[in-house]
Image: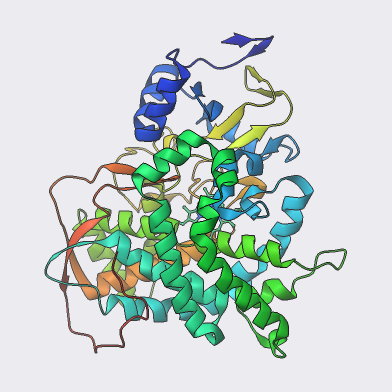
Length: 451
Ligand code: HEM
């Protein structure tokens, strides 16, 4: 497709509005059809969103992820999230500003800090699982969301802010449920991020969460024991850039909302997909149980990797080009969005034999590749919560298979449904759980697992 001397990859010629509407409603159908017709690289013209060059060739994806961050802008590409997360969110920054903030945000999610979160996660899983309903059809995603939200809220606010954790969970779930209603998402998509942001409606919905964050930041700044605290909020209040400056209140607000939002919906959806798959694969559940009993974790970790491969929660990531770029045989102008397609790479038979089969063993035979296993994106923008999310999923799954027998809540595999930028199971991962033994009952989770 030559345009002004540039050579864009081929793609559908239907009007941009039609392409946009199908993209909003059934993006997987668009990707499958275009991959079958045009192959590894194709161009979509999406009204209101822009021109997307979708890439599923691992070698080209490597060149995108290793590309110059001054040319490949992920922050600008993510601007649809700006009305919700705020302009200073890590997800929305680019270039030096992004790298500076990323350095501050990484430490709470790695090394010692991550190891310290393990007992917190076990504790939250234990209390939540003890109250998951048995003997009836149950939708996992809302239950999982209560669990993952409590994990991230505890990690962020620390144990000292117990009341704050409970309040944050309730307020945030209310605000996100409001924002994620299908007709509202559709309206937001039609208005476009700028008008949504100007209208302030999303920020308005988050106002109670913001007020709570402001209060916790104020307390942390006044806390004489701040140095000893290990929660994310305290670490971020203490953090200093190379020039000695600290995060402002506004920056802290945007980063903390980002962590709370990005840190739980995705993980909960992955857990719902996990149970949707496990309910249909008792042989995997059996092997997991045997491994848990023997104290190992290789198969458990491979199972998490396989869930995220076969049912990636985020189907693609985006990089807005600031300069013309040569991508394989194509020459792309500035302004185009290059989109490594996680969903399509994960289904490549040349990388994953029998790609549609749920087979965790594949990752015991061959570990995930940097440019072929992409549930967390890649390069300098790779998800900072990837290790936390995988740990959480692994511990939750291990707890679930020990405690419950799992059968599907409905015949057949669950279809996908779009929820904002994620793809979720259409029936929220509906299963029937049966208690395997009767572990001692524990205190009810602080956040009611409803919704
Ligand atoms: C299964 C769960 C999760 C999935 C599938 C997921 C996926 C992703 C993806 C695809 C990206 C974009 C990467 C790119 O553009 O290359 C991302 C970025 C990000 N994620 Fe996650 N994520 C998950 C959990 C988490 C958690 C638990 C946290 C919080 C601790 C988190 C915080 C972030 C942040 C702050 C970014 C922006 C990174 C940057 O721009 O430098 N995510 N995530």
